[in-house]
Image 1 (cartoon, chains in turn cyan, orange):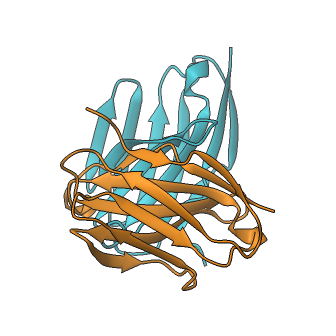
Image 2 (cartoon, rainbow over the protein chains, first blue to last red; image 1 turned 180 degrees about the vertical axis):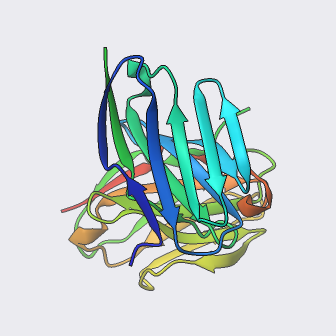
Image 3 (cartoon, chains in turn brown, red; image 1 turned 135 degrees about the vertical axis):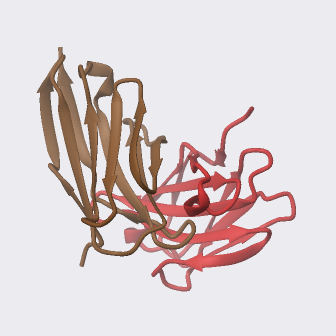
Length: 108
Length: 115
């Protein structure tokens, strides 16, 4: 069973479009992380959430603890946003459960 | 300051051999965790160390082991390599328990190919 479900798996968007990636989880968590992985492997942590909403530039992340759901939004998408976005939940310390990732391609 | 450093970046091993991967965390970070990423299984948690003690362990066989040194540097070892161990191995560090509000920082990973 998957503790973390992400959708969609693949997403293609035109430059400038508003993008939403969804994450649902089934375990109690202390934090939820949104990660970005570019080709080549390196992973960057975009957000760490335990409640509410966070914004960083064109990226917005929200979490609803009661519904066990989080969303990552990208406003005014750009080709440099093309990457795999991974949702990870932390029930205990660093013991993450990961979603399978959403592969985003933004076309100029 | 320097990020999380993993060595080697790429390596090829033969079935049955063993491999040791190294991870140097960000200075001051005491928590180091390891992950395996494969196309079929995605990212999976291997284990986490804090102050030289393994605090958490994922669901991997005993062939996968690790340790952390007093300077917080960590190594992971895979013995009796199998073809299915071919993967990207990622290390991450944080000040303390990420769930307690500490951001996690990943290294670039070590690409292991088993032939």
